[in-house]
Length: 259
Image 1 (cartoon, rainbow, N blue to C red):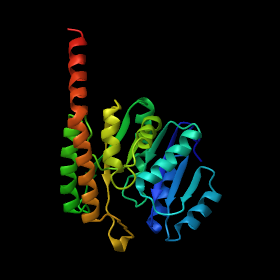
Image 2: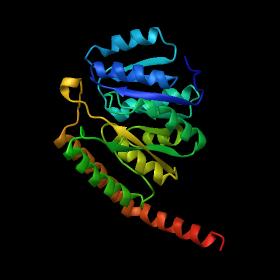
Image 3: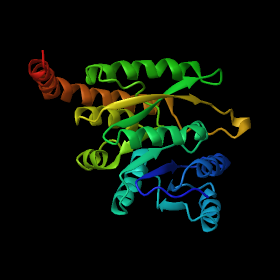
Image 4: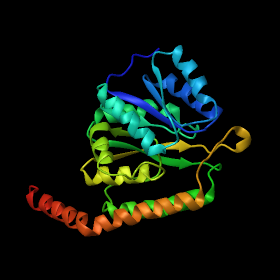
């Protein structure tokens, strides 16, 4: 078993992902220690199986929320407990097997080399990716580039990321939003606004078909309305006072830079 990190942990929020979460956690534990799973009110019986796995692996910890609260809420629960225990960074990884476990070490190393930055996965899609999902995220990325004045967010929706805990938790505790599917893009934008530099690393994505055990809770109507509402809120704040502040900061940096 690998030596556990005292600063960086891997956090997997899970809701009714079925057997895929067991595969995901096993793969994650091969590449990192510690691994935490936050079960977001799952009713698929995986809690008991994960707890049995954790009983035989001191590097694995399982936490359970009493009812489904959303991905962002599950991540915040993990962030809060991680900071209490002295961790400084978390790598978030989806439970459905789409994210590449073999990239965990590379992402963690990048974070350790650049602790003030957020390490963002930039998805590399294969033929399994639904065309409508790939096309739809381009719109979200376009809004994100505008809201951050092209600060360098490679992809706004990809949840395979290393976050510095302190600034992200501070942001989340100031707002009632960022608790569900809107978590990933809003986290990236607000961390950029807070001065956290994005560093992008390519990572392959695999979408599993139902017959392969693939599970998706994405609802095209509900979640696109949620994303549209989120970008509307961010745009309002951006034009109200973020844009003048960002332009002033860029002008100040330009004037103060050596000639």
